[in-house]
Length: 519
Image 1 (cartoon, helix red, strand yellow):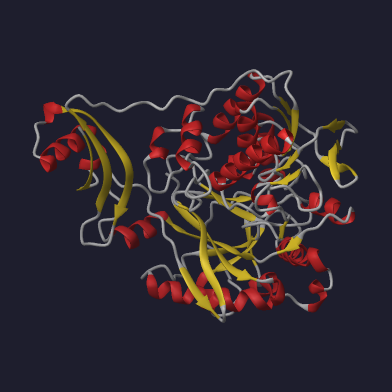
Image 2 (image 1 turned 135 degrees about the vertical axis):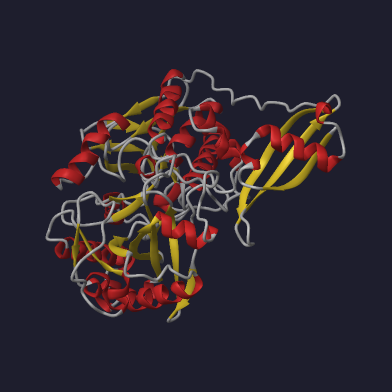
């Protein structure tokens, strides 16, 4: 017999498989010895009452039934198969490559940056020496931005593809099995490099190509059909289909497309700061006076408000995490957040961002047409670099000082390794963002008692929440409406917002390529 039930257990009880099994037997009124297996479908935390509880959705197998293990995808050898160029090795690019192999096509993955091991040296250089390699940093390199910036897997894109299938592939390549059951799954920055490395090995073992230090500098287009790409090394790669999965920070790709007259569309984004509290404070706010205890994870939060007609909200909240430098060029400061799998750092950080639409921009930006939002963001990042002393130090202030329109005389300790400098955050953020952010923080403090405090820093700027452009595509064929065979994909094309949604979009584009090549 197979039965799905709901359980509410204490954090301690929910930590032990035998206790979950016993609770399942009691609820169903059967003997524990008659249960063959209990499979947890979803696990979530309910902190609304006096006592924090764990909500579990489980399937109980009894009598003659037992869970069936899903077989992994069948990946044939495609060494001699028709080739497909995939630009970028982030989640959209990696999962597009796997889906191409599954369907008998040979992927050529072109990555502008370095592999995960070599990439670490360049990340260290940003934090220690304040040197930014424009092709190898927190945004560019094997696995894309997600590899070294947290690895959160929560997505709302459940109708666009097989979310559980994506998670199973990640588990097969080294992620913890808990990501399949957790309500807000997370791999962790310390474990993601091994996962993406295993995916690369699988692609190579099946006959695909995976090439590093191959930044695309031009597209070969004839009679409105894609024919291939040219890279920074002068290499020319040809194919009938190109999946463009570059990520939202590949601004040079947007410039190339714009110069070639390939249609793009400006879109709204959200920009702001990282805010950093002590994790202990967030635990007590969310879990109550007793805090986290032994069996609960580091607490997270999600906040949203409307301020002067625009949304202000938390983004990519990182419990027990770090703030990291995410610039992709020398004269800019950009911050992002990450957490290791254990989420055991003493700080909690989150992006707090303000939504901004193209019509909100000043006239000087709007004159730039499709590149207007990108120019707006670039100037904000440059102001942050200036305010940070023209280094990778980040401009910062105490939250309460910012809301009182004061420059902080001193700052709290931080996890941001290059360092922070007290600065005029109104200058950094500009006239549109600063007042809305200020209003949002005050409102958040009324929602979460203790959140609004002088013991929290705001650190700027958080600007890489999404792409400032969308590369259009036909909704049925997923190909660019004007350039046949060009398949814009993932976050960089404006069609995803995280690891899982980008992976799903990569798979969908690969399936679209299969249909395109059949014709």
